Image (tube, rainbow, N blue to C red):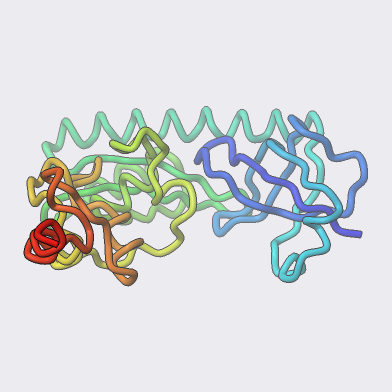
Amino acid sequence: MDKVILVKIEKRRDLLHFRTREEDVRADDCVVIQSITGEELGRVVKHFGETFSRTKGVPSIPEILRKADGRDIEHFAKKEREERRAYEYCQSRIREREIPIKLVRVTFFTGEKKAIFYFTSEGRIDFRDLVKDLARKFRMRIEMRQIGIRDEAKMIGGVGICGRQLCCKTFLSNLEPITLQMAKRQNLNMNPVKISGMCGRLMCCLSYEETVGGRVVIEDQDERVGYDEEEDLAEDKK
């Protein structure tokens, strides 16, 4: 029977569910999983019991490729060093060419000679000369992928004002549009500092309670939910 495990992807620090048929997979074991960039290394954080493994929908959870051995760990350690070297080299070329972009992450593919350089910028940038520098240095296909500021927060992670890890990093797969009307309908303080996340945009959690009436903020002791002052005075007279 397939077992469900929680895996922490070593590089991205993402926590994802996987299933495995291997009986010897335990917590703290390293496993190899499949991603859009090829294979990635992960570490087992939690092992769920048989009750969870029998729940509906488990077959749709992706399966690990294999339990990692010494060669896998050495291979991914080398890959991480090469990505760090590529990041530092790209940063130096950005500074020398004075290109107004912020480099976020570099990812090498494991199945082909290709690398993705994720960056943010305020507008369209001509980085053709930068791509030539990178291709000449690393002898592989280079893709410069521009991401938004919310995608940057999702990629890097952090801690929100609630004290928990960012929702976009831990469990949100799609970043839905958040509007100021969502905060207004919930009677929230419209101070931008109070309703903005680490990325500087409106917090994703504003959409969680928007469809069920929203949050109620009590500014004064008499401003209670369902409180009617005239009805209360009438009761006192009786």
